[in-house]
Length: 252
Image (cartoon, rainbow, N blue to C red; front, side):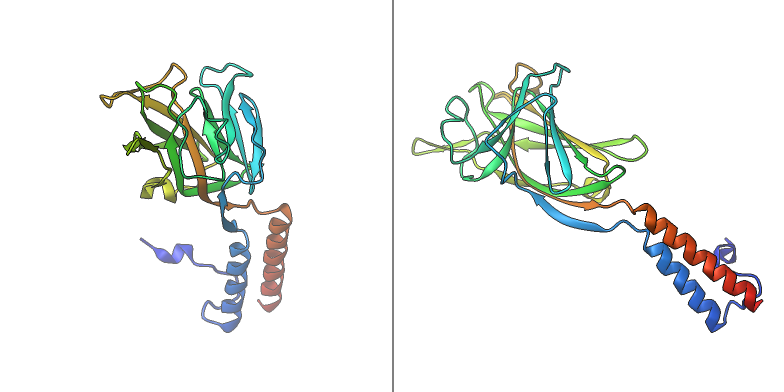
């Protein structure tokens, strides 16, 4: 391969000169300014009300927009809730996760949780999260979470996570959140969107979708979001390159 074809050159300027090196450095810095800045954050659902989420509803946290969708496309159906872990009344008819006194998101009735950047064209990566199955039928005590990521060219990548059934010790049900990590392929990609849903699994380990039993608890979503460069950044880069070219012509 002829690597010289990719060198940064300007007419009349010697490639080994100090002037060339300073111009190349300036151009590199200008290009680096276009690289999206990423910052890490955690969605913990704190500060939100103990609210029900219906299909089409959305809320925002730390630069991401999260919304509930009915798996069958129905509008107005109950698909989730912001659950206060210290409120035992809310889960009186469900076996909700234990040991979490703060807020978490509950995906209910086969509902899908969608996640997108609030900034057009913005992307994000997800490293880990806490999750648990929410039981509504003793015949389906465990679940399987499906996380599907969407990225720029329209392609998708997904990963599944088993949500085990609770344990019983001395007559007490223990059903804690567990921490899950994405594999190297999922954690390396910049996604434009993500969907999270769950299957319910029976006592034999067979998992399926339907009957409003695909339910999950989600908390502490660790992610990093990349901002899209402002138009002014491109304008500054163009101005810088024009200035470099003008100086090069004067020195030629």
